[in-house]
Structure formats: structure tokens, C-alpha cells
Length: 243
Image (cartoon, rainbow, N blue to C red):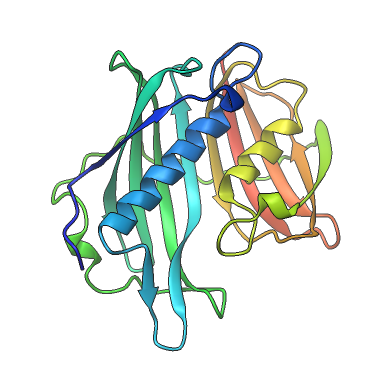
């Protein structure tokens, strides 16, 4: 396994295709930056994929929590810092920080990942050697709370079709698309300050995804993404909002 820096820093310039009418990057753009930096850090450390003998192991996201203090402007140069922040028998944890061009912290995040057997589509125990990858005493940028739950009552509902352009290198819908489907079911995403997603099953090309959102209660909404054909839950999410 190659040596890796204790934390990975990667710069991005916010492109015109990544902003909305306010000329600021979307929360989906920030999530994409975090995902890209995590992948590059894993590649640099020699832990992007794993030889499982008859198959290959690769990382799959299990939980993601993001908090936003602000969003960068179009053409602004920003920096993502990411580092492994812990592990247990089946999951590895990774944290994130997004800084503006002036050095202000715009967003922080934490995530939990499985290694899956690509052929069997099942998690496996974390491969040996991962303890050498990442800081010896990692700092937590953010921690997880209780897992998100399904809405008790549905206030907003919308259906999406999984397109080829939604798929990632493993052949299922990219994890950022789940954030998009949860937020797109709402009349507006203005005022979003936090989102947490618990991923439960994969969505593949041709699936119809039903996105349900509960009512706003104490600045919090619950969300559920499910397969239209049989009601199987793809993910649960919780969002928090600034009034």
C-alpha cells in the first residue's frame, strides 16, 4: 500500500454549470466536490479498490451528513480537506471541510462507508492495512446523530426515473443523486442548512424513485426515497432549515 498524506487537500474552481440563478454553487456541487476529493485521496493511498480473489471490492456510501454555513460564488477557488476519521469492523469513516478562497469554512461533513464485493453486491469486512491510511489521531469535523426516519405523514411527493447519466462506475445511481431527489420533491431548497442521508439499497437504471417529504416541524423535515414498483426503501434522509 502506498503512503498517503495525513489529510487530502484539493482545490476546485466553481464553474458556471455548477451554480444557480444566484450565481452560487448548489449543495449538490459541494457534495460532488467532497466525493471527488475522497476518491482521489483513496486512490493516492492505494485503497480505491481491493483484490478479493474472485472479485473486486470497492467503497459504497452508507451514511452522509453535511452542514452548510454558506455556498461559494461562481468562479471562486475553494479547497476541500478530507481525512479518514475512524473505522470499525465493517465501516470506515471520513470527514470533510470546505473552505472559501478567503479561508472561511463554508461546509463540513462526515460519512460512513462499506467495502462491498462488486460481484455479490454485499459488504465485506474492511481489508487489512487500512489502519495505515489516514491520521493517527483524526479530528472529527462533524458527528452522526440518530439515523433519519421515514416521514409519519407525507406532505410532498415526486417521482424520478433513474437515467443512464445518474449511474456511477459501480453501475448504480450515484450517491449525490439521492440528495437531489430528496430536495427536488420540495417547492424550494432555500434555507437548507443541513442534510443527512442513510443509504439502504441501490437504485439502478430504469428504476422509478418516489421521493416523499414530511411536513416541516421544528425546522426539520424527514424524507424517504423508495422504489415505485415494490415500495422498497432506497434511502432515508433528514433536512434542517433556516427560517
